[in-house]
Length: 473
Ligand SMILES: [Zn+2]
Image (tube, rainbow, N blue to C red; front, side):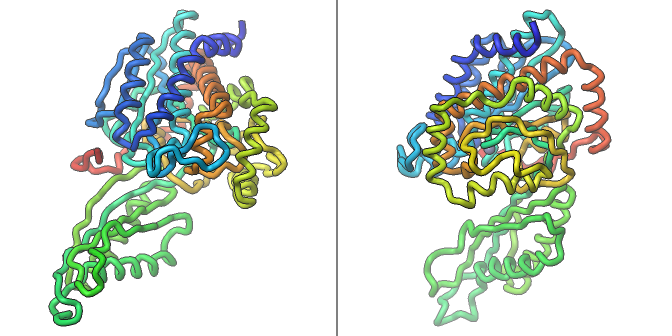
């Protein structure tokens, strides 16, 4: 029997469990770092399947690791499970239908992501059992991808460092192995302390913290001309110091994200932003307090592992969508903007691919794109980046929704608990398991993947979060 056939058979054995976990995590839809029910669910299912389970790792209650087997290679699968605020939505419903107003929803498909990674771990475990080969399977339940950066704390504790290969995927509207990097990100709060006063009677006695925030933003906006063009700086007022115009604000806080294609560049930019903030404090005679919040590294694609994943993906093929799926996807697509639909081809082109590979007339992506290795960074950030500095890592995007589905939307939430996502999730489990099964027989490929990583990092990982900063729980 071919490896592919063996993986398909084992996947069928675990299909019910995988899809059940996915549906349950979708229902739980918990916030980042507070995924209590979801983490319990993973711990329980892992135990039921004979994995040794550690919970509460890296000081995060909802971080879970399941391990099975012994010896090398050690292959890890990364799962996520957190949800997003304001995206509660009726499952599989192509009309905006909020279930619980303001509640969280799986708007990034992390219920699929976690369940697919878990499925790959179960399939690989059975494959090891059946073949008697040596190897260790590890499933990482990583909390707080949207908020909290769980993987960075896990990376800081060396939890990925003994992996020979680290595999993960993300729900998407199309099928490809991710050959591009992502932006490193630093998040910090800039807090200004001033002195309050009656804004009309004694304005000369006041020192405005809000003025300081505004001057800081003016300074940062002037800095934009003189920073690397792919860097991104954005901010939001966390606390504008109250709602009364006739009171001088003695407290204000602005939250900054500072992103760049490489973590060192983001760190250098962060130092410059801090200087701008100091300048604003000087101008306004306020006191500046900088609170480092969290940070994550850029993603390092591993070309060696990517080649193995690409081959496995082509062998298993795209999710087997049928006519019914096409009909459901078409109803979702009717709710997208023309820009959303056009963005699919544009994104492919930006990654160095051929946009003609996904014609605008298609509703669901039913093939696997060729690999586009690009030494360039796509927008957005992920804490998979930190895992990718610690161990050779490969990431796949697998279709779970209609082409053009906007990220972090009610449409994605609805589709993440639908037949579309079920097919994508099972495909993810199979592709990652098949790639891992191939790697068991390819020690030289694993050694090459490690050499490739070391050439990029010098063999060291510097966690961008200082040791004194703990997870935001
Ligand atoms: Zn996500």
